[in-house]
Picture 1 (cartoon, rainbow, N blue to C red):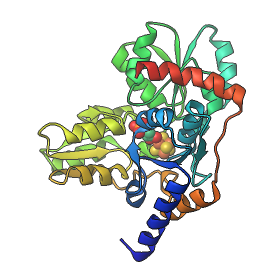
Picture 2: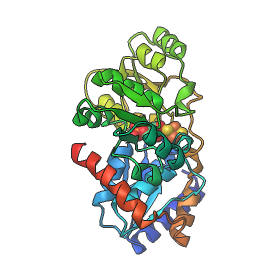
Picture 3: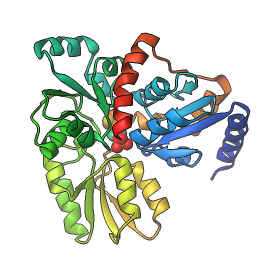
Picture 4: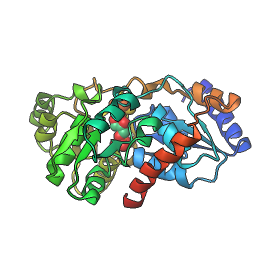
Length: 304
Ligand code: 13P
Ligand code: SF4
C-alpha cells in the first residue's frame, strides 16, 4: 500500500467514526475500496444490510440504483454516493413513461422489476428482485401474466427456470454482453478442470456454455464451499480480487479481461474520503415515490 493510501485510509477511518458511518461496497468495486468496507456483497445482501443498519450515514460504494435502494429501505439515514456519475446503463434502458404505457397495453400484468432500475420504475412495479432471488420471486407469483423489466437476459433465464412465459423488456448490461460463448469454450480448453460460473445477465448462449449461473454472492459462496479448485469467472472482473483474497489456495480465471463496468470503477479511495468530508452526494427519493417503491422492495425482502 502506498503512503498516500495509508494516509487516506487513516482519515476515512477517523471520519467514519466521527460521522457514525458504515461503508457498504459491491463485489465489483476496486480492491482498495473493498478493503475499507464494513461489508462487501451483492445487490441483495447490500439492500438487506442497508435495511438493518443503525449507522447514521451509509457510504454506498456501488452504482446509483443501489444507493437509492438503501434510501428506499432506510430513509432516516444519510445515504452517500461518492461519485454521482456512477450509474447503471441497464437501469437507464427503461423510463416510467414507457413502462406506464406498456402496462396500459397489458392490463392486469404484474411487473417484476430487477433491482437494477430507478426508484421511479420500482414504484411502478409489483415486486422487485435481484439476480440472487429472481427465480424464487417469480415462482412466488404463480402462473400470472408477468412483465419482467429491464434485463431481458435475466428475464429469459428466469422464464426458462420457472417454465413461465413472461413479457421481457429489451434491456441488457453492456459489460456482461462482452462475454461470448467462445470465450468460455476457449478457457475451458485451456483449463480443462475448471468450472465455468457466469452471471445471469450474460446472453443465453454464454449461459448455455457455462456450468453454473450465479449472482455475484452466489459465486462467492460457490467458491468458498466444495472441492472445486479452479473456476472461470464470467462476470465483472472486480469480483476476482475478493474471490482470490478469500480463497488463496484456489485459482480464478476471468473469462476475458474486457468485462469491466466503468461505472463501478468510478469510485476511488479519494472520492470516499471526500464524500465523508463533504457529506456528498446525498441520495434521496421523493416520499411518494419512495413509499410505492418500498412496497415492491419489501415484497421481495420477505421472500429472499
Ligand atoms: P449482483 O446482484 O449479482 O451483485 O449483480 C449486480 C449487478 O449489477 C450485476 O451486473
Ligand atoms: Fe449495470 Fe452492468 Fe454495471 Fe451491473 S455491471 S452496474 S448491470 S452496467
